[in-house]
Length: 308
Image 1: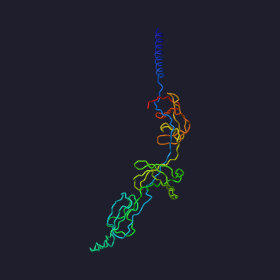
Image 2: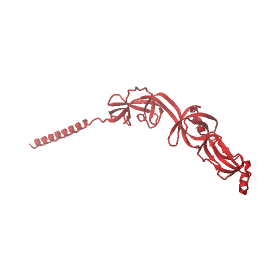
Image 3: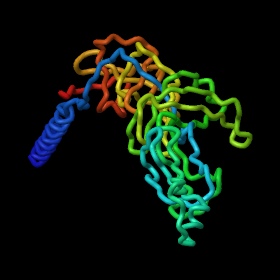
């Protein structure tokens, strides 16, 4: 009798353990398949350009020296540095040495001679006063430089280009001038200088702004040169492109239906700060590409589409 009860107890323990194991296996089978939330984009056909930037320094090409035409003292100055002057505008008045000597001796002159001893010096060109070499009361001799007038429309940027990049610069080619305040203006390469710096091995180019701007001389700006352009490129957002650690293999994640994305190897072309050209393969404009949530996805991944 005792053996009978022992066998019954062992049978009950075995049955209970089997039920617990079945429940555990059932719970494991009920774990849902995880899906990665993603956002989508499509391929655009548009123009894209690759460019590089070099430094350029502003310079007035045309300058006119204002010179004294008599020996004497600067009696009056009608302008200051930075002022705009026009042709024939009075700039300086010089009192001759003889007239100053007479005044110092307090002698009475013959008024019938109508001689005041004042020589007027006027602007020979319109422009900006960029240099003043003398102040009121200075003694100057005939031919001394009093100041410089720079012609505003002669403002250019001198661009120093490493010789290995000279093939990308063409005379009359377009470029962009980016000033220190991030203002961008259009420019044109107007001239190629025929000498190379022997130390830096750079060649100088003259860049002419296409709009009149009021900037000082010796201002350093960035000159953006177009390297390559494709007017009908297949373009994706840069975040849609994935790469390996060596940046030699590239791919995108393309949807084959509403829940599965596959890995597609691509050949990239021109790349900008936010866009990239896809040279191969040729995508359809209706193809859906993942551009957020794509990092780390397997070759065939289950996804969940999120509304943008």
